Length: 401
Image (cartoon, rainbow, N blue to C red):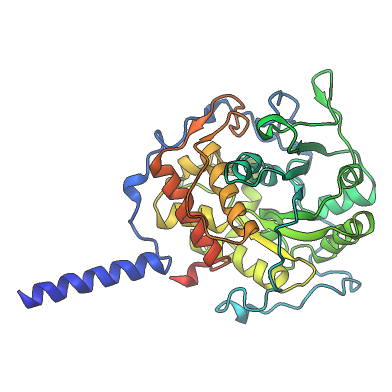
């Protein structure tokens, strides 16, 4: 009998270590249901190469402009141009001490005007934020997004240097009912009036501007296009000198639990990922290592939000299917948008989530722009666990196992 008791206790200890250290536990797989977690109609999504011209609800059928498909070749070859004095030299031997050299976290309590510069992953992160902040009692926040699909940091630097009117401007202000997102630049003949990044940057007195780090930035450049990043940073400083600068690094894409899933137009990215290993953990580690080596220790960026880890954790540790989290191999579902946005919320406000107070993600958050998603207790638990794990272990990598 004593042997049985010790055997049982030993098994419990092993299970707790596996889950707590980030191994690919089966725990939580009973929560996985590709039909019950999300109700948005992923089949209605247009090709990601289409233009974002039909988004009448301002939530967005995803619409990365196909002009970015050849972005794998840039004049910024990742080596920097020597003038980028703020970039810190990174070393891969720092992987075991995530965040120890990160600048002190800023007090964001009075930083209530938040702007994103990015592509569809920035949009996926952004869309649920007004509803989440409002539900959690943060009612006087303004959110903006300078959006251009399929663009990486090198592309953004080029558009900024050329003062190109290529961005759709999404905005949510406290005086807009229910935090509804608007495009103040309006539409003409059903198409958005595209504007320059400068016009968006100077439209509000932004407290912080987040530069989105996308999968191209992570996979195709060892230094996250350092020279181009500095171009973007210098421009923000010149036009909004009082604004802080942060980053937000997105999730694995293309990605699917199905090994036979087609990467589609992101085939070159899928091939590039395999330069760093062939497993999901290897690809996730690439995100974490690049961020730690190039961004996290650089005092240029006062706050670096990790929205890659919550997706990895939900999928690989809690066992939530990619069909639940993603709506295609690159973009978040309605539920996935809520999960990454809540993770952003926890990291931005600087506290673990005690309770998911938002009960429903509105149709504005749905990629199809129609149906609301009422969050079940199970779904709230998944969001809370993923967000809190990331809050405590950003950029942990699979070495945390």
